[in-house]
Length: 190
Ligand code: 5GP
Image (cartoon, rainbow, N blue to C red; front, side, top):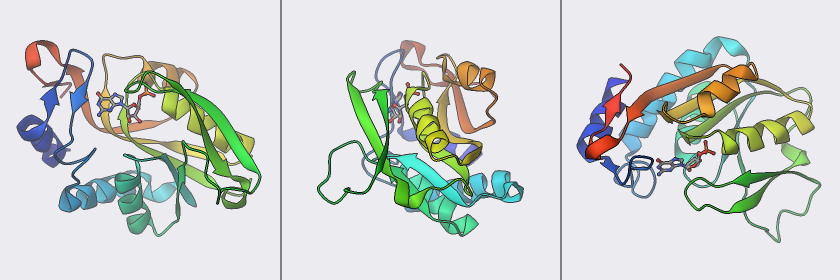
């Protein structure tokens, strides 16, 4: 997606060979027009797949997920990372190792919002080693719902996530595929 790659080139910062900072438009300050375009792109790619729910993980997945939900006309559920007094229903949980925080945490979705009738599109801001995605997959499968695929805003193709998820049989649609962050240079696959 050219507009996204342009934003990454102009406003992204390679913090190291592993980590890309996109706080200017995705992870802290959010560019609504770009998010709208991202939502339209994901919606176009999954429009024929019978999606009934979108599932993401807080916090940075929420903006692209909501814009996609708006385009597809379906609700968006975000897995919560912290205990909440209001999240008292039966919970579906998974343990996820955070790439950026380097800690293991529990993520949860209430059983109220997902059922075996749902066909789910998973959306997230980044795909690195696939831990967040696998946690979401586990939760969705616990609910008995089916998974149409994953929509990823920025895939770091030099890490293991895509290969492992494809091995598990999942369809992955990434809007920008970064193959290298060496020497502060951001290089895309195509
Ligand atoms: P994974 O679980 O695939 O290893 O990592 C994906 C999660 O870690 C995403 O939800 C994202 O929040 C975070 N993440 C992974 N790599 C990066 C990165 O290079 N930059 C930022 N800002 N977040 C990342």
